[in-house]
Image (cartoon, rainbow over all chains, first blue to last red; front, side):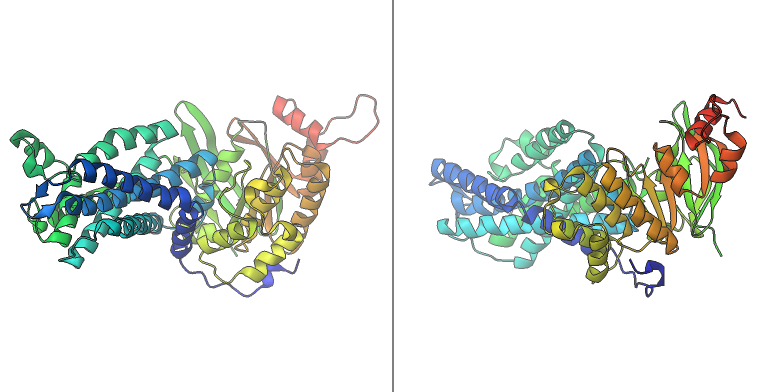
Length: 262
Length: 250
């Protein structure tokens, strides 16, 4: 080997682009499981609920299928964003290969940004897959694309952050599964994906307003139809605040090295 | 010129257990340094503090003058660590693994250096193999390659030959010796004391979180060795280690 110390001094950049690329490549390598499978699940929901509730109208003018499609897209975006960060981190922790990232000169902000952007990317890729496949049922109209993109990005970033928090916190796969099954899953399923909250009894309508996932779905759906259960600006304020809160928690955990640097 | 590694009054507790107790140590650039001790002595904790994986309760550590906490970017760029466990990312090939590791350090277009490391570690034929398909020995070589991918002047090897066959051990030591001759500072922990005796110029021995011996290998052999019962054969590092750990020469 030549004298390594005599080589020209290397120009160091940020490790962020590589960590982002690695996180994207990780789910791309198992795309059948990470992209195709959730698209199929969403189609099954659409087929079953669309068939059972055929003829029902929402907001007085929308077919149930048209109403359902944006909700399913957003639910898929959220669940896959969560799955990306949480599964990557728990696998890396359990197998021990997270040490390679921890040994690198990455700041907590670079670490956070790379994982979250990869989660957003996966969420949006899978969400687009659902949207394209469900086009067979008739693509919903798109009234305000900027609202769609804003809520898709913020929703995926929130769930990516929650996945990061859960992935760091969990020591075992079953702890992560508990977080997913007892918090993420009920919150997404009861967020208005399958119904307008106006169809619920008053008490449950109030309860729904305490579910931050409701605002993500409702704001996202507003972008398609221009109608929603509550004002998109209210949803944006709540979703934006929630994003800031989970980001601060995730960044603090990384900065402190919680369960990562002992 | 900065010391390669500077450790000042490092203490680390895990609950009631004191893993490191007020450790101070300086390792100069270009040294081949041995860090020895029984299991649980604190070797891996000390290495983890240098690598930024563990935070000390008290004290400071620096790599080439860069504090491992406050100047973590510079410190980590100066340091390559070969971890004790055979860890790997099962999603990627050997080449992808090395490219990613290079990228984490912000180094792009590093393929020429990666090829050179792989050639030296006999990994070229496995470059496009998935990490899962490699034998334990090959995985160990990849760990060494990962530690070198950013050309660190200081390299720490935490029991790199544990569970490795004789052939790989010898080729690994030849390679590490060449790196040391090229000017890299090497810090080695091992339970194979004949390896430490042959390779290390200076040795520190840890026991229950404290340094109980620190000297050149020659001085340790001269001062702490014991005469063999049969009067034949020279004292080796194993004798020295046993004597020091049992406290009979202190």
